[in-house]
Image 1 (tube, rainbow, N blue to C red):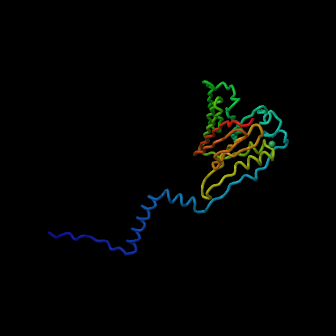
Image 2 (spheres, protein in one colour; image 1 turned 45 degrees about the vertical axis):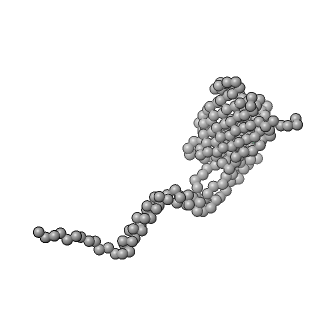
Image 3 (cartoon, rainbow, N blue to C red; image 1 turned 45 degrees about the horizontal axis):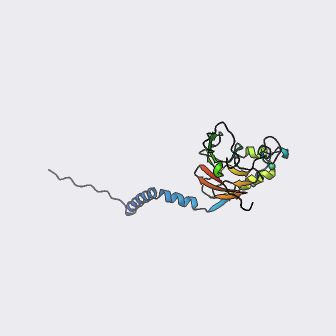
Length: 234
Ligand SMILES: [Zn+2]
């Protein structure tokens, strides 16, 4: 019986090494996918995103949601408040910290030795607000929608230019040029002075009068803690 001859392929040297090269590159790319992605994100450097261009559409300054004198404005609604609040900018929903001396008698409150917890969903954000007035502590935890971004319609239509500029200033943030990152559509407000404070992810804390604020941003979440700092020599 005739012995079967083995078969061979003839292949050009550059094709052979070319195929091996492509193969090794593919394995490498799969293995270092995360690193390559990170490298791509950082490859064009950083940029600052600003909101200086927002123009107020409000005709009557007296109706401004922040500094105006209408029933909608924070100046009127929180006239007697000594507190601090968080504003959800896309729907202008204001959450006040349940710190010392206040803590609304909300029907949803569950009170236990002065502790209170309120949950809610504004349609835009979900929140959990806790207060411990006896200890002068309060916290608000906000969960943002997955694909959150700023919708400036309400603020442009209802804030005067001066207040809109203050909000715009608080929205500034840094990002990698290739990074997909949006402004967090939230800010903090001192309900006594109507000063605005940033809640972008670079901001980790500040003092507002006799309150110390700690901010813990997480992906899609924002945790804010308020502590009453007793003022000495008073
Ligand atoms: Zn205003």
